[in-house]
Image (cartoon, rainbow, N blue to C red; front, side, top):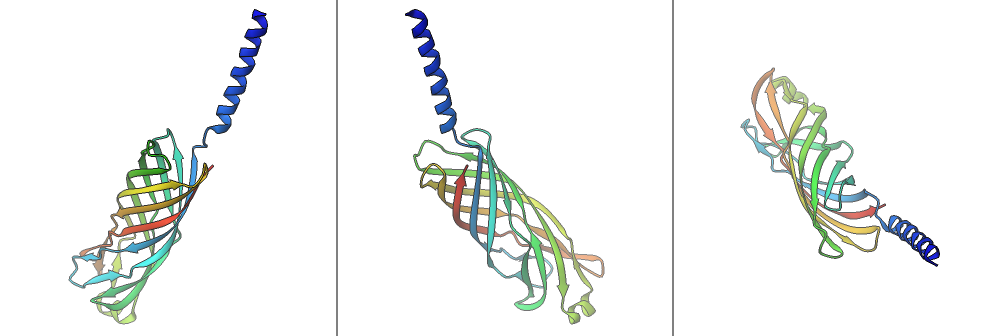
Length: 203
């Protein structure tokens, strides 16, 4: 009888372990967001430089090291903007701004799961084109690479075990040196707020 009880206990332990393994969440989560990019447009060149605000698609991939600690990679495709001086269009450019953030997720609020994040943004400026008159007068150029901090606050509201609604706000620091005939004349800071709403899926 004792051996039968021990065998039954072993079978129960293995079954419980298998059930817990099935219930355990995957560490991977993917979100898709619509994000409004609201630029600060701080310019020290005296030219009144600015780019237009716009709404862009965004995808992020998160990996949870623990239920509370995660890393998030934020991605989109190169975004085209009009470049203006005192409101007048003087050219166009594209920028690609991926960010990598470390996050802390609060897990004791039921379906409501807020989080805080901080990390680094890398922005690559490309396809910079100035109007012919501007080219002739100023021979302008900008620095193509920008590194800066990124800060984040947001929450997921879980609809079930896998699907969630996401609201996310980021402040990203993006800047570039502006040159005329190879000489630096100032700094243009985009420094946008990114206001996002989307859906997430936890595998």
